[in-house]
Length: 226
Image (cartoon, rainbow, N blue to C red; front, side, top):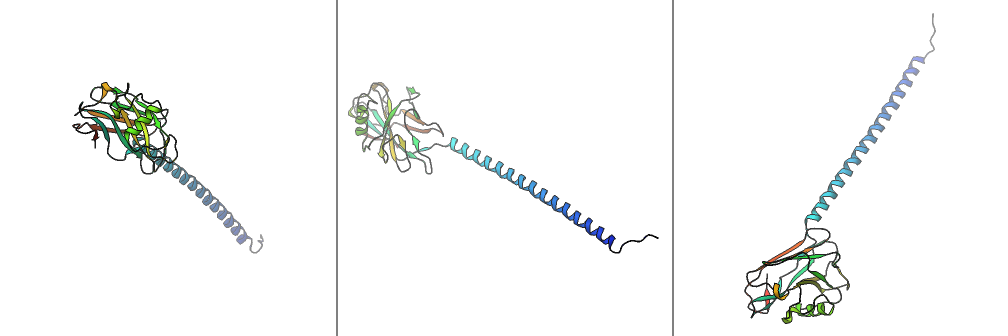
């Protein structure tokens, strides 16, 4: 007859129960860790997708916008434009823009001519209230050889940028600053009534700012191009 110590069977069952609990806890911990990894991968993928969408949206939209009416300097007797000025600023929430000629270009197209880049430079110091004043400063700075507003056309069609609101006296257009992208036309390339003129401000990132206008009847020295 075999003798069994009292309580031994129950002790073995208790040990087995503890081992099972430990194994189950281990499985739970591993499952939780795997779930955490999967969630992290999901969040990472979502963030990358969001960044890609934002980047694509930035590339598809222009960093600049028109900030008012486009005006022109007209020669009434000849029925032609001597120069135009396009008011621009940074879009709401946009980053600062470097308007140094090394970082920007202006493409110009009209009924009779097309230029890949007519941008000469920016008047980085001070402000100008009139197109005539800005063009005279552009002559002084060597961007153009004569002031078209005074009915003396430059040799080549060129574009300049000047500030109406200038906080830092540099080539950077910041939030809160405003300026004009002005085009001085050579004598042979001056637009006349019903001509369609188009300028594209091209920057390293984002879509170009495109401005297209039809030249109205020129009956005054200051022409409203809308």
